[in-house]
Length: 318
Length: 170
Image (tube, rainbow over all chains, first blue to last red; front, side, top):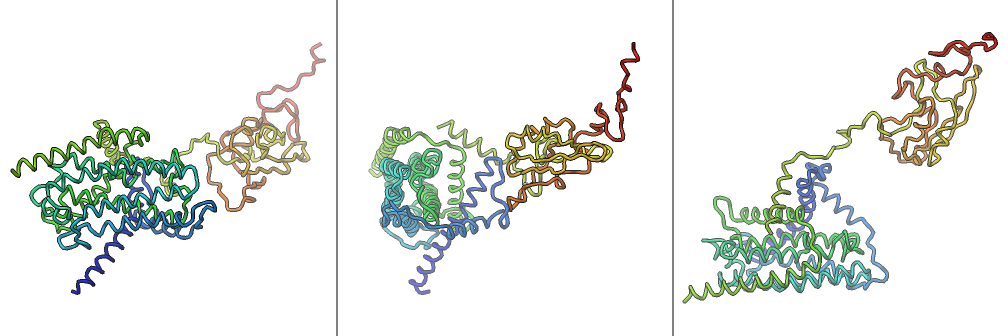
């Protein structure tokens, strides 16, 4: 088959798959939260309530799309687009299966880190542009959280890079054929997961949103499809972080019996479900606790992890 | 950190607990017999209206949702000519039931009263009056009251002695 056509089909497939998944995740999350809270969750619309995301979508599209008169209009409109675009773009470097990758980039991890930092601007800008005190507080919190957690997000991945000797995600997955990196890099995995949670501002790190304190934080003023884009961006972000964790620490597509893509899908799903369980179980910390914990505990831990991994690899190399 | 893992495990175990949701239109929640729901007007065991139009319920009502006017039949028996409850105002406090001297007005365990049109929340006497006795069986106000009305003279009520002419004692 024509390589251009092939990659075009792949891109379409990934896009459609991700958008559907983001919609479905709304339903999955609500059902799972209900499961862990002894409730039933949405179960009326369609089989097991699965069509609730269609109903949600229709509602979202047909709502009035309102922009506050005092808002900074261009930035306000731009903000929700950034999060969706960056989250979707990041999937270009994820190797779903051998040969099934849109962009086999040799600086894959850097590309991912860059785009995830870009994505955070969406919430900061959205909070700033809304001209609303709650949104502004949400934006401020996001920027502080972004600076503190961005630092060790990159550091936690460097252990994997040292072990595999590559920034290319495909080569990292191939390097895990013998042993998943979660075993030598367990600390790195934990730190990356925490940073990833903070990056997607999911509970328990949803300080920028914090309904009980800030109404809806940075997207208080957003309505209709703009709000929907924040929503889709968040769920795509969760999928992305799960996919990256699987790729970097859990051997990507490696696994017995089942075809590689199925393994990748199963592992990613397991992490998405784990993130939802975290949301159901862990309460939100105070904001200063979050920052102090990030700078005083996680960052030194990440540095230590990096130094020890480097030392071991160096000693073995000699 | 350990406590967080414990929390996670505890919450995860809840997946196997019994659901507390009641799937409403198919399954209904249990409402106790004395639940304060829809208001009805009951009848006595003989099929007569219990209400004597004393206005106590209307006075007791904190939101003024009860309106009635009294009438009297040819036997001198009082009954409400019009009885109207505006359920869009009613707060189901049950004060009317407490105030009622004849057990006529009662709150029953029925909460399915939603309407699309607010005007439909106004219930007239024909909507309120039921054929049964409601929660209090066998009670007939005029049978136990000392009041003389058509068909029942003084001293003919239950557990009531005939009136004694005090002059006969002298």
